[in-house]
Image (cartoon, chains in turn yellow, red):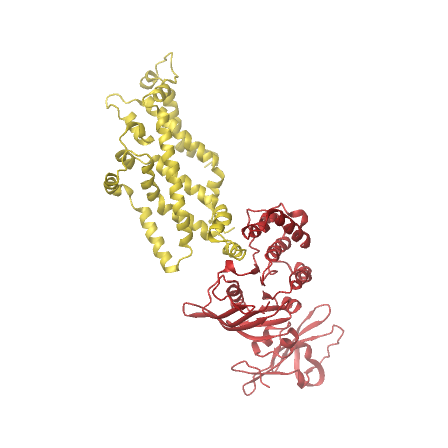
Length: 270
Length: 323
């Protein structure tokens, strides 16, 4: 089969739903329910206006999600970077055991934890606090982040650090000048994965936050979509989806290069 | 400044990687550590640098025991086989990093790096990344970094084995000029015996984790203590005759000559090497290598002989030299 055709099919498969959302968000309610009737007002921005002027306005949720996403990514990397480094320095047997435990934790369905997390939130008064959400998010992303960063550390030639030791660089200085810069591609791709997880997370956000001005994006969207089972606000929902994807698209575009090289690093010994 | 190593050993699990290593290197002396791969050369170097933990024995820098001092606290300048330059920093920044963490003032740093780049003839390449340099240039940057450290001891871990043969020969005198003039002990690890003989004042031969002999290149060549050293030092390799009563007799290829009477041989093949020729012979005592001037005519009926003083005798089972 033709290569171009295959690529076209794949593009349609992955971009189709996104295009449909954009199309829906720009169509008037009338056009959505009667697609073949020729209406005067076929295209409209009214859904965007409704979403952005509602109370609280939709950008508030974007901001909330952004705050939670950035703080959980930061917290996660802060803990995962030293842990991933240490995993290469401990004895082989302990390292194998630790990696197995991490893989187990990474594969564990986190939804099963959420009742326990709810108890914790109640005990420590973490409910309705935006930044508190980054605690479970950073913790749940930890196993995968450690494993990814660990393989990046593992791929660094050990002589680089040896040479730095002989130059007199302390552990912290080696981190600052050598290790962090050299694994930045892997750090970028790990950061994106953690950020995505926090951006998309639903059950914990739903149960920890009830104050409507502190909702994160997924919960806020669910409220729009499920406002009534008799009239589903397709247009508003689609507009919210499009707005919610824009920051992610921007993020991936900005970090495109390090992400791709980070995801494929270690595949071929350089 | 004297480097002393006493009964040094490193054990990993049940295996001794090196053991009972004794060595003293004086000011301005260069000792080459040679041996086949896996014999513990690099491990010995790493122990001296403090990059690996010592299991037994002591390392003294000028009578000061540094056996368990951290690598960051030892004044050691090391050049790695892979150069170990930081790929994300320019040549200048690579050299500056060490000075900066050791607290040298910025104006001082600039001056010292500039001087060092002049010395290794890389003035114009200060701002490029290591990846844009040739192998020989990278080697010189790594050397410059070690020199800027102004260490008590220089450790060179196969510093030239990633370079081609011609470049190696060009860099050898430069290495002498730069490192050996510093009046500090130098340990040069190499698997290339030519390099060892050309650079080192003394050579230490390491075999399965033990030092077999430490001697000047000439002594090592003329009086090898073991059969292993006799075979390892000198190319073309020494000839070993069939063991007789538990004694191996070994003769250097250049000590053999054609004679009217002697060991009858058959010519198998011949290599012309420019300044000499190498003949591969087959004899009742096993295959022999004979090296002679290219002008020597090869007789039709070959008889090979040698003088008794050129014979080296070794114990066949232990490999030790017999008187």
